[in-house]
Image 1 (cartoon, rainbow, N blue to C red):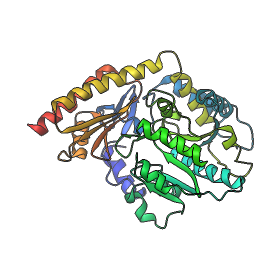
Image 2 (image 1 turned 90 degrees about the vertical axis):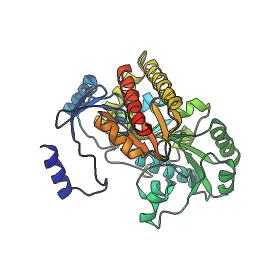
Image 3 (image 1 turned 60 degrees about the vertical axis):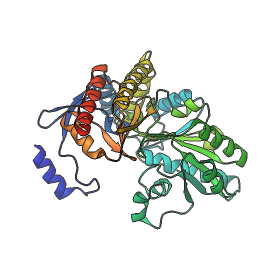
Image 4 (image 1 turned 135 degrees about the vertical axis):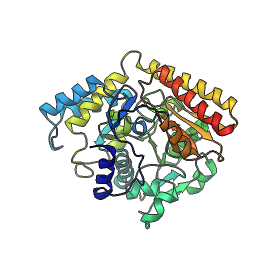
Length: 400
């Protein structure tokens, strides 16, 4: 099908939840590059929104998926699954002792975390059920995760939302302390608000949250859906803050493009879930776990983290140079290969994204008029120079 046929079929048969999509359909990719139905090449600095961490056309990933598909695609969780056990062990070792529950997405992982927190206190005979989250956050699109997502535009159409979710100002000690009660079960926070505009949590604030949770007997949940699996340069972004959450959640990059999510919890918390308390049909199936096992084996191989660190340092350096050159760049922030470039409100962020796309670079605009960059970890130096050169050209035209 050509792009016009795809668009026509989509308009007729698919629910319009994504609005007017960009009139491009990709057919294949290699490395950090994608090719559309017209044969045009694009360098991807979004990676399917931090999903395709190994880029495109990774033959060994394809082989791992193909091999598993030829043997066993799906198996009910009433039976043991070897790939699932191997993945749980990898994450157990990588995290320093957290037990896993596998699901299909980040939203499902956060739902599972909320249920686990409430069950933990129910089992202890404590009436704690409230979940505190940050304004401007993003935790998913189910009813409970929308309630936790502190953005009215996502919440308003679905009122009344499930009770027990409280949204407070991000990075504010006073706001969080004012929201804590004897009904508080957990606080959930992103170390970097990706959808909110690549806004980092301060080290002091996150350490304060850990201390507050310890003092008040509250569980600390860290949403690592976008920041986890080496996106910020280490396995899990909370490692940069020298704290450990009680529960954290994963998805996106874990499967390298194959849908999988995970709830990770310290053993005494994880044990609150008893048989029948939670479950999934597809979560943790052999295919998804085989993909995730390959991804983790690759990312933990010798030298791979240095590759991420090098790409991050180069990208931040070049973006810093653009910030010095153009006053319309208000900030450059982030960690690893999750970076935000905040533009002055006078610059139309969406138009900026479109201009870059016309020049063959895929980026997107998140909250606060911020260009979000989350490229595959295999991004090459020449691609980084190419993007920053493209941005320089666009900014030069806008500020002339």
